[in-house]
Length: 165
Image (cartoon, rainbow, N blue to C red; front, side):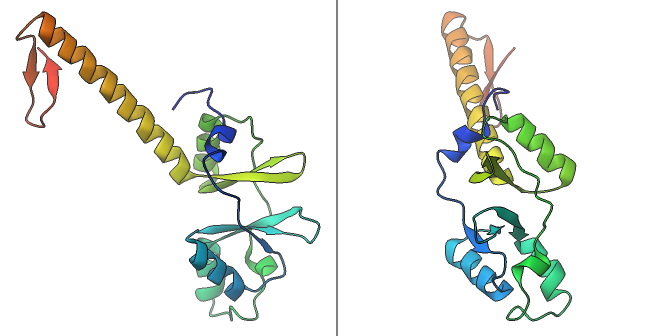
């Protein structure tokens, strides 16, 4: 993961962030999450400002485990109201560090008070995997070039790769 890559670069490849009214019920929220295959919603006030974040974890810990009614429990009673967010120009490294520090998996991206997007730990893992694959490809090419120039300089590993000897 490049140190200078920003969260806005990840957001470009994602769709719109799903939001739900802060006064909706947990049942409505859970159905929306299921319908869209997401684990987190941003709760918003009527004027569009961010009110909080509601995750599957919040629902399990604060509704299901407490035997509360999802039909009568409101998002505002369960959501995390203290929202930790990033600006679009924050680096992916900064996003990863914040997620680790606060043990969270979703970070809203807010610019001038407006919700611009969301970055998840899964997004960061995908970027890191892509970077690792690019490095592997470069190293494979370098080893192939070394073997071509100096036959016998590399050795085939049990995993099917090559190493310099």
